[in-house]
Image (cartoon, rainbow, N blue to C red; front, side):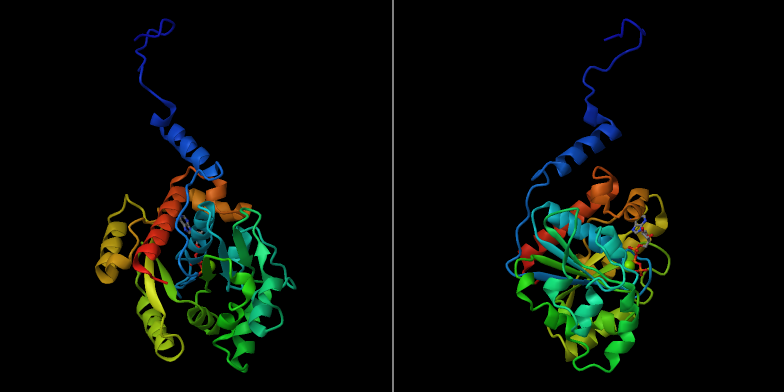
Length: 305
Ligand code: ATP
Ligand code: MG
């Protein structure tokens, strides 16, 4: 068919979703419609996942908040515990974390209960957060002299207020100190984000040894259930090499959805939100939705809790 005004050929069958922008808009509207993302099975028992990697900047916090938001969108009730004094997870979830707010610091020191420290994220009625304030920076040292210093978070999680929660994600700082040990004792699963970059596996051996130590002495059920490839750039050979090496090493514990390097993912925290809210149709948002779905389905299938 020819456009009578321009004389150009017009393709008859073109629909909005055939263009990249149209497709993104369609995905976004699906995700944003209540119930539009569909539902995911609730785990038989609450799943507690510690997100750890002592290498800095690999996507621990980004993965904690976006996986949490993805599961919340599917109707699951999710709690993120921010154990990093930087408080980046609290920021992304839109939760107040100024010094003095009841937070993970008071929780670990026994100065606040779970119900006092838990805050609702404005992004979803299913999403909750225990924020981290800068006070947490002193906790590594303050905890050293305390009784049962490694099991404080685990005890705090026994609170009835957590009973209705399906998933708990614990966002660790980039170190293997007492905060991370508390997270490893409180969880049953470890999720390790691995950045598809040079030195990707640097430090992972040390992390695995620490996990074994915690498993042997403090938490026999602890295991590395999930590896998530982050900042994957499909245009580079290096990303493929790293992904292949990680899959070779960790086998089917590696989620098949890798998170692409995406500007939208990195911009979202600046607006106090997750990429699922910031740009729900973007590749970054879609990849976290896929990874969240995979995580939930795997847990349901394998009894990974
Ligand atoms: P830290 O060890 O300091 O706690 P982290 O492991 O929690 O860091 P993030 O804070 O999640 O890492 O990410 C590090 C930086 O990389 C942040 O600026 C974040 O916005 C950016 N980033 C994370 N994931 C992506 C991605 N998929 N694409 C682009 N940028 C990303
Ligand atoms: Mg972080």
